[in-house]
Amino acid sequence: MSPPLRILAYKPRPEVQTIRMERLMTCEPLELEYLYTVLDGHQVTLLDGMTDHRNPVRVARKTNAQVVLVTSFITNIHSVLRLAKELKALPQPPLVFVGGPHAEVVPEHFFGEGVDGVFFANQLAAIVAVVGRVARGEPFSDVGGAAFRANGSFVRNVAQPLAPSQLPLPKRVLFEQDPDRYYYLYYRQCASIKTAFGCNEHCNFCFCTKMHGGHYGPRPLESVMDEIESIQARNIFVLDDNFLSSRNRVLKFSEMIRQRGLHERKEFVVYGVAHFIARHRDVMAELRRSGVTGVIVGFEAIQDGDLQSMNKSASQADNDATVEICQELDIELFALFIVFPHWTDDAFRRLAEYVRSRGITFATFATHTILPGTDLAAGTALTVRRSEPAERKWWRYDLLRLHERPTRMSPLRFYLWLLYLYMVPSLGAASRKKLLRRFGFFGFVKAAVASWLVGLEYLVKLFLWK
Image 1 (cartoon, rainbow, N blue to C red):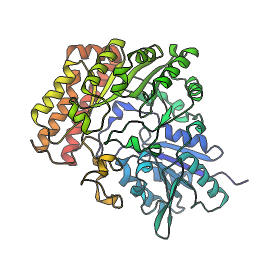
Image 2: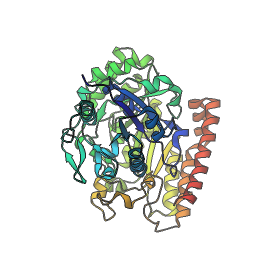
Image 3: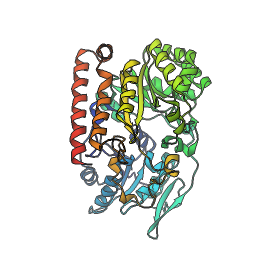
Image 4: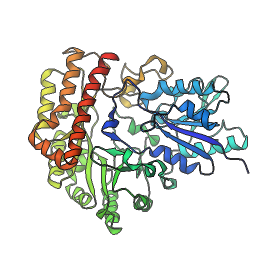
């Protein structure tokens, strides 16, 4: 039997140029805990850069890691490539492998010096296979779902996406060590769960539609219920790209939650789409009775023409109905919008008035960003060349930066309007009353201070890093 390997699994902290949203939300690092689960039998050290700021190179050296696994977002590309080089400079350099959401869509961006392999399909199974071969001293360059260096370049080995039914129940080692570290706004001690992979929508700006092989893959609900029942925390963040994908599945989820009595001790916040909510009020009522108290909805725009240009399935009427249904059922709505570089002052005012007049208390506003791997990137002259990742400042893909110069105003004026939009939801008396109800007095004060600090940081970092 081969000896266990010493493995470091690392999730990078946000880049210094990006905004520290962890003051308001920090999600449980479920990807690290899945790695810990499937690599049972090895000596695995987990390092969540969101909450643990130790230097990963020093940790790798101290633990004498033989393998380092890094999960990465698009904003971390440069730091991950730099980290790989630094790890290879250690006296006993480990094997370095990269995975995560961006590697799943555009693995080529991690084909750099110091990286031994990039996982892009059925990542957990591929990692288990590679680690097993490394432990036995066997070659691993033919493992499917990953790309490995061969003769100075990387060769991709195709594989089918993850089979959701084979996903194990994760050992929540980091969450259980200190649940207070993980929260989503007023959902304190908030655990995370995946009930499905991929998305069955076709929004042209979103890379989620390209994940899981471009298909929607739900887990068996019985397994989902077992996992929810095993979670000690009351609050659970459902990380599905679109939880509201199937009327029948959502109703079955709701029924099984109540059958097990979980609705009496669990609250859920989920991702959903406006057209589902608008056309299935009865389903949303069932979900509310089953403990769903928050829903994150990508509204993106407030006019039908803009929605159609993004290939959204929802209409302006669907967005309006979603607001009304969520307010009627006391489901907190977290609305997501996109702002465009061609906007005038009036366009910003219209969006601000929309949010204010409809009583939306929680809203985020992202700049129009062409993410590599999306349909939007494939059909525009601004497409990032897949073979040249070094030519971009990847930290700018934090959804708060301009990627085109505004045509109707200065960049400074654009950013000040964006900051104003973030202030709008909390300006009204009704919104402040709701915030006090959701957070409690001390939580409200803490959240208000954190929000102002985020705003100040935003302005400072825009000045330091354009």
